Amino acid sequence: MNKNEALDAVFNLRSVVIVGVAPGDEGFNTGRLFLNHIIEYGFKGKIHLVNPKGGEVLGLKIYPHLSDIPEAVDYVISCIPAPFVAQLIKDSAAKGAKAVCLFTSGFAEFGTETGRQLEMGVQRLAQSTGVRVIGPNCLGIHSPKAGFSFAPDLPHETGPVSFICQSGGNTMYLVRAAGARGIRFNKVISYGNACDIDETDLLEYLHQDAETKVVAAYIEGVKDGRRFYRVLQELAAVKPVVVLKGGTTGAGARVAASHTASLAGSHDLWMRALDQAGAIRVNDLDEMADMLVTLQYMPLLGGKRLAMAGVGGGAGVLATDDWDRAGFVLPQLPDDIRQAFRDALGNDAGTILSNPVDIPHLGFGHEVFRHALTKLGQFQGIDLLVFHLPIRGIMLSLAVAPILIDRETETIIRLHRESAMPMAVVAHYMATGEGWHFAAKYVKDFYEAGLTVYHSIPSAAKAIDRFIRYHRNLMASQP
Image (cartoon, rainbow, N blue to C red):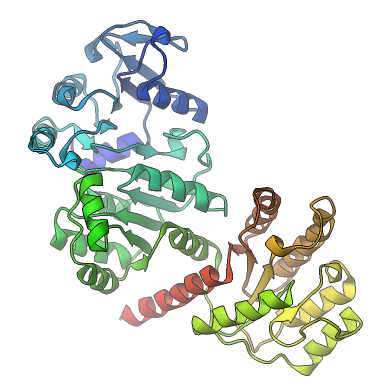
């Protein structure tokens, strides 16, 4: 089976086999972890279990051998030791499985000759049998459309973004972090050592996938640099591709080699290749989440002029520095807008009425204040209006704060719905765990209203700057 057909089958899978799950009386193991998570996520397809000891767990029969399963299977998850994997692939081929996911580690990433030989053997079997292999040393697929995931708390809704990731932990972090800000994923794959299905195969697959509109990729190394560059360039010409390269320093490259047996390559060469291919490169997973949020929610901008309004004079001062460093301009506001804020506030004491505008919490919710914000949203001298809510520095108790923050949120969302001006919200990183829970509700309210939400001014400035440059370069490259 070719790789695209196998990937189609697993992202739309109807049955899964977990090999190596412990019987109910033997306690917990990684096979049981996969089983629990698949069930908790809500997979509606058939789940089959294999262990030579037989038995049952959670009311499901455990078959002694893959061949004992009476039905066809799509996807096999290996939770058995590396030396037994070769036979499992042969058994999977005999059973007609489309793909095997090797959660199993102990291959080339160990840096031993034994590990390298085992991985080469798996690669040869994948080629000779036609059973496609994901991994080794990976989590496999997350497919909301199929109701299937390796983690039960990942979003269940499907969306326009697909993500390929060489690291399992990084996969879960990004899907959770971006998901908390409104990003929903279509196809996600943790692909590990990539001994069969590799990063270029996945990019090629997502190029032709009509359900994927944006691609994100965390890559530690590539198998074929020339093919990778060609496929990336072709993909980036039709869909935004956000790339995070791991192992860009000498120390990081050594860790990448021991993590997924990847040859990281020259940092400068990588950066030039990504730029020339038209990809959007980021420096960490949080920047990747920022970029995905921007691509999904931010409308096209005419330039880098912005106005900012929010609570806290000190926060406004720091934010102005951050915007300036990223090349944005905060123009002077016209007298009529400044007068509207004076009228709303009653006096100028303790406030900033230039740009940015410093607003007290008590101001939100009053009609005169909404009028001033509406005038700001109609100002043709800006391309973007940003609201910042420094909840981390709030002087109110969490018993009282929701009353005022509710008003702020309602005012911003109403203005967003009534105005054609592009808008964004910065709900700053929280200073306490309690603050995080407090802020999460408002972040959800904002993204459900279609607003782009960031957690800091520097991250917003960096992402929006990349967004503007991406679209300028895209337009310049078109004939």
